[in-house]
Amino acid sequence: MTRFTVNDRPVQYRMDPETPLLWALRDASNLTGTKYGCGTGDCGACTVDIDGEAVRSCQVTIGKTEGRFVTTIEALSPDRGHPLQQAFAADNVSQCGYCIPGMIMAASVLLRRTNDPSDEEIDGAITNICRCGIYPRLRGAIKRAG
Ligand code: FES
Image (cartoon, rainbow, N blue to C red; front, top):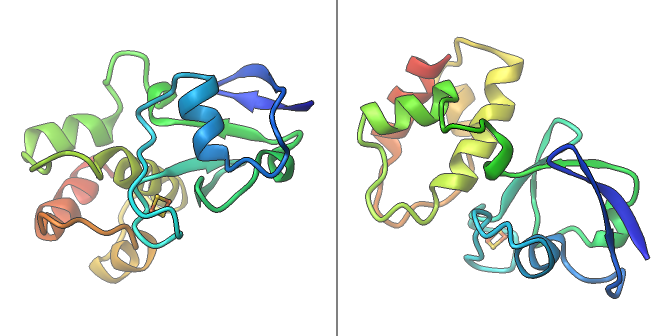
């Protein structure tokens, strides 16, 4: 059994410790805001916050998550009132929207480090891939939220 904390709640998974965190979150905890894109650590659609770091949840096993604190997009704010969520909506950042939860989770980690990130800092921190090409609006919304 693997135990850790997800969105401020203790969880126990009776699954193979080698199970990717992404699938435990989606299939066992029904936290489907965290998306599957590539499964290889490249796209960032599966990004969650683990102990204050942006982590691609397809690349970390639940065994390696033992005892840690995981936050998913569902818990970023209870009413979608987080400044990033408001800025993304106000600036119409989303196109298809599939990558947005991972983008917001990566951006939330960045904004805890600096509330006035440069374009270079944003590009360095947000390595998530968007096939719709939202990057210019993404930078603007992150700066607005900061
Ligand atoms: Fe994890 Fe693409 S699904 S990085």
